[in-house]
Image 1 (cartoon, rainbow, N blue to C red):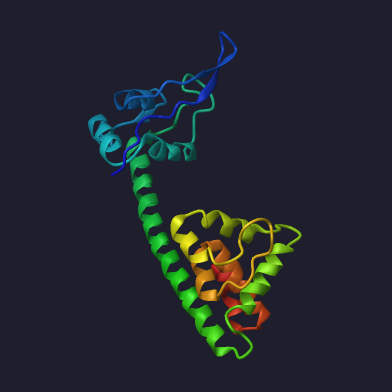
Image 2: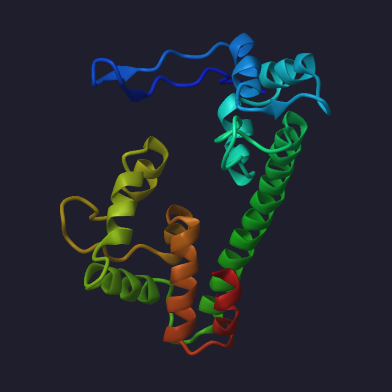
Length: 220
């Protein structure tokens, strides 16, 4: 696994000089003592196991980000330090988070695939739709949007700097600040983001008064 166990250098204020100073990177061997100083225990997970986990499986920032969800002492000698927090709890939350992300990513890929197929099938069924009209309507709406004008236009223009997309979309007028037109839907669906796909699905199903629009609230 990719490991980035060193805390990035960030700026903080030096109390003595009152100047912004770069905080030095922390080595793995320094991380356990640092956490112990914050009253994080190593009873359920030994210090050796914790150091090995940080070195081989995950990085310090990801694991310790969850510590902010735990309470701290509000008074006494331990003020500001964590109450009954063991490193094992942080490790478990990190693993749960990772596995949840994997599941959600697969769900998103499946939903994206379904939506694209659904849109293409519906376009084929509509007599008044040729696969260009709805894209032009959507891009016109995006171009003239009063709240977020040209958001999709800008997104497309950024992507076509990529060599792969440039080969596909170089035949369309996407330069400058003009309105993009006449991109076929089968190509348009491959360049927009997942969020843009949801918005387009909403626009498409609303424009043609399709029953599929009732699922928008789930997708959002």
